Image (cartoon, rainbow, N blue to C red; front, side, top):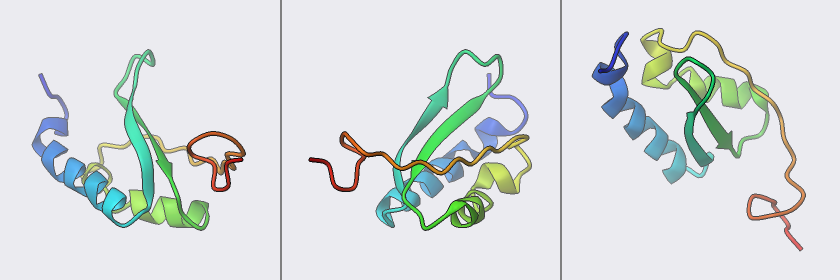
Length: 87
């Protein structure tokens, strides 16, 4: 059962995530498990934390007040498929 409006806004949230992919701003995302509450993780390709925050503010879940905590970390992947210049 979807609670607290999640189900009501999930279609718009998924459309938003697809838009982030289409615009090249999202690399991967998905739910986080084992925290005891609903949580998600997004890897974005943006200029800085301010741009990431601005984009998340446009997420229907954020607009509807369903995000109660947001942590933004800047990460520079040096190796692997998410690295910009993997060698």
